[in-house]
Each structure stands twice: as C-alpha cells, then as structure tokens.
Amino acid sequence: MKKTENKKLIEILDKINEYREDIGEILANEEESFANKSEKWQESESGEQAQQLISNLDTLNTHLDYAIGELENIVELD
Image (cartoon, rainbow, N blue to C red; front, side, top):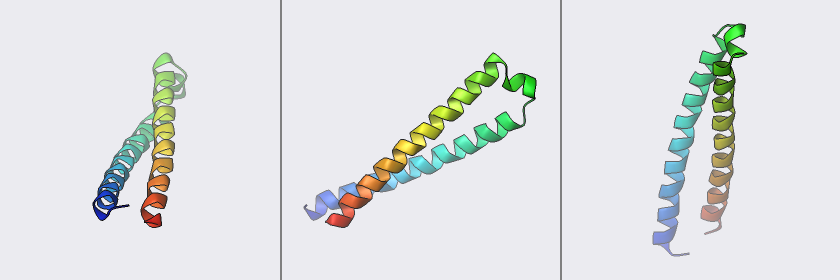
C-alpha cells in the first residue's frame, strides 16, 4: 500500500475513534438518564423507546469497534 493511502486510512481510523468516543458518551448519558427514571416510566412507551435507543447506540458502538479493529489490522500490515 502506498504511504499516502496508509496515511488516509490512519486519518479515517482517528475519525472513527472520535465518533466511537462521542457515541459512547451519549450512550452513557442515555443509560444514566434511563436509570434515574421511575420504574413506571421505564416500563412505559417512552421508556421502551429509550431502551431501544440505548440498544441501538450500543449496537452501533459494537460495529464501530469491529471497524476500528479491522482498520488497525490493515494499517499494521503495511
């Protein structure tokens, strides 16, 4: 791989890491907010929507972790 392509992959990796960190912060805030709500609210439609959002953010972070790992492998191979 050319050095310019490798450098571009490193830049992409850095951006994805930043996004992963930002999403992790949002996820933590949503989880904390959910935990601080009453049990009645948690079991309501709004609570179910909040749980789905938390689940989706967690899944997104899992996918980003995978992408980060793959990019790190590619960069290390060069």
